[in-house]
Image (cartoon, rainbow, N blue to C red; front, side, top):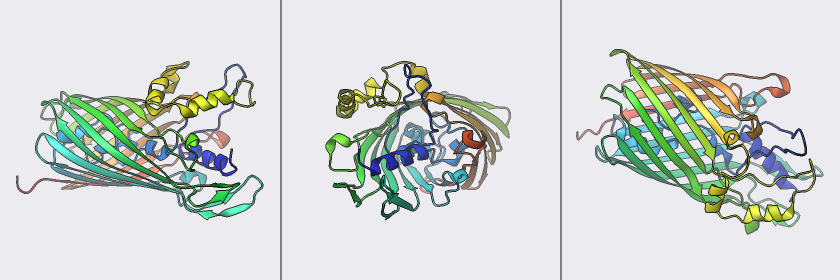
Length: 385
């Protein structure tokens, strides 16, 4: 393996929020499913961030395209625009790592809408070195995801959405070591989504969603076609219920269940020994479509699921208080945390804020503790109407 790759891999794991895990026995090694471009798994919306990253079946807003594009035709307004800023890993003392996200939709009619969004992830300034500590230079790794989507109602309760995404990941572009030149990686992907709602005119009722996101090509950082990695293809299912008490007060609760459609890489069976080369070659050469299905093979599928549980209280649709919990199995990274958030709406403008409650102490402290998100949104109506 090239000297720079382990450093980039460690950086990717850290940014994804994974904790360091060691196998407890050689007979059952722990194998965390990892992917390239993990920034696509970071919740880019302050509203969802306040509810434990809940978003598959929540009521539609300007950031619906990040979670379930099919919700957009059910939006109350004709035009929505959202902006979110997320400082990342602040609890580790990193001040130049952040995620910027912008999204928007336009309803062409009461039945259909088009949407677009962009995510920009800055990893700050990084000093690259090899195994011996020799300085290779300084860089500013960054990643970008941009997509365009279309969604349409099939009935008064059901809608579908389709989005295409371009991904660019420049972690060490232009640097060379041991005869290998690294370049920016790129990939294309698509999202398929469905949304079904029984909500009444006042908003009370159930909503359900299902999504297949980031279904796309592998991504590589060299000219070696055998060294490409999977992007985070994901299956998501969600349910959301709103209870309206009167004209001023309502409360909503929801649950999302997600699973990576990425197979686990082969691991050593003798606690630290070399990985069987034949298994590694099979893993690398597996087609993208085949990888989606093979992600369901192996033991303990339940441990591969992560859950978002959240609630939102709304007063006069102008003040919102939110709380949530995110759970990931300890064998897949162990990200488990509570979140809180608030939202304010005045005229066409909305402000959202979310906070990830600190957990753990010392070496067990969650590196995502104190994560905050700031969001700004605008809801507009077509003047022609």
